[in-house]
Length: 109
Image (cartoon, rainbow, N blue to C red; front, side):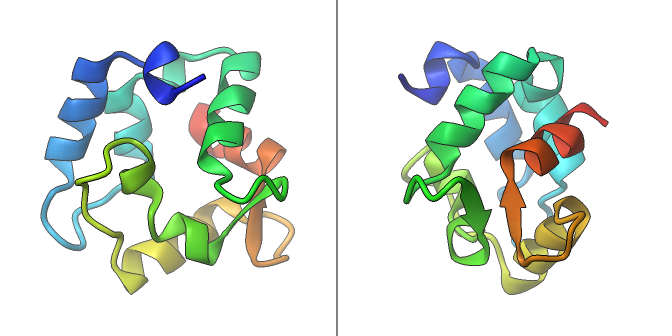
């Protein structure tokens, strides 16, 4: 399964266009524009599984840096500042990584 099986290609493209400039990425805005914020819990779990590149059950800081590239291989890498802000916003238990439930909470809030 790929992200385009769950999200429309045009919504993904629009979300990526919105954050092309360095330090312009806003997770909440990206989730809204891409359509993720309207998806069901089971769909968000599948999106998380796809984004969890090493299938560890968590999205670690190293994976988060390449978040946009999971949607389109030519997309930019998140800046250090964007990565740390994204991680801090989602990592509710302070373990330095984002679990599936934390991801789902962030997308749906």
